[in-house]
Length: 123
Image 1: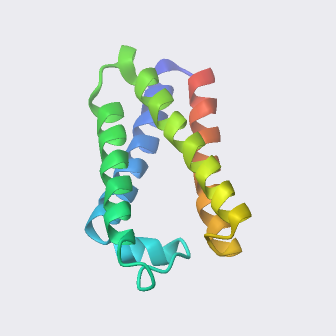
Image 2: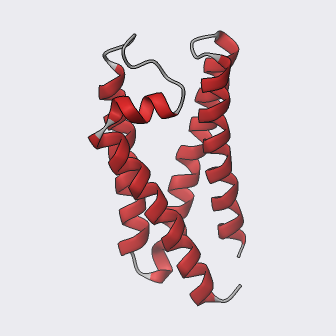
């Protein structure tokens, strides 16, 4: 993969992260429902959704706005958060604090982004 193609891929992944983050921040209950969560049963979840959203906007914007030589650091930071999200989703599924379908959705999504970012770092 050429450096230019890698930069485009990093920017596309980062734009996706920003879009997900903006959605989670602006409409945390809807975003939660899309991932199989129950925001009506846990009114505090909108606060947590906004924390997640702000984090993803910051990580994505940092990757997009940084010069080429710093993009890998932003990708690695995002990947570290994604790996932590995989762990959190798996634990929530194992402990039963999330329904199995929601645990699978959040864990699978985080794993996809973690693996995609790991692949990008190898390019």
